Image (tube, rainbow, N blue to C red):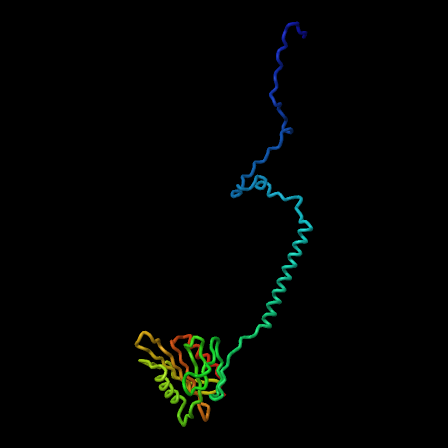
Length: 248
């Protein structure tokens, strides 16, 4: 059909855009995104969805840094070995604590003194041949050769001695018995009697007196211990001195 001059061509039927595609040309459906795990809001999206990325080119320590760390480790090991050797040497050369011993050949006894005790040059009570006291002077042990039993028992001798020295040393308003029993010291057997003195005034505190008589055949050994004020520490120290005595 010929077109006449001055006539317009009618518009062609327009196709929709974009043009329709066949099912084969349709792209695959994008899978729905999994909800973000709770508690990971502070992570970046790459870490939340794909895991924390690893550096494909990890940094390596420089040779100078490695050499410095090696030298520092060697020095630390060497210093620890030297310190251990110094401790061993000091322990080897340090003197052992000297145990003071009071030797009384007249009474026939040797007293091992605990820490803080020392021998008294002169016994404060007449007839005693040796004495030792603690540094504070609150506790003391004295020894002397005693008379023969003369057919009596060590208990009878201990009773007489406790009454005598109780009057001389304690001067208590009331005196109570704290111990009255047989005893064995340094291979010798005997008897021990202890009393505690109380005072009515507020100045003098309770005092403790312990008398021990040991049978040594022809003669006896008399030990008298006193503590003022009376307390558990002083009694324990006196007991340690008497327990460690050697009778010969």
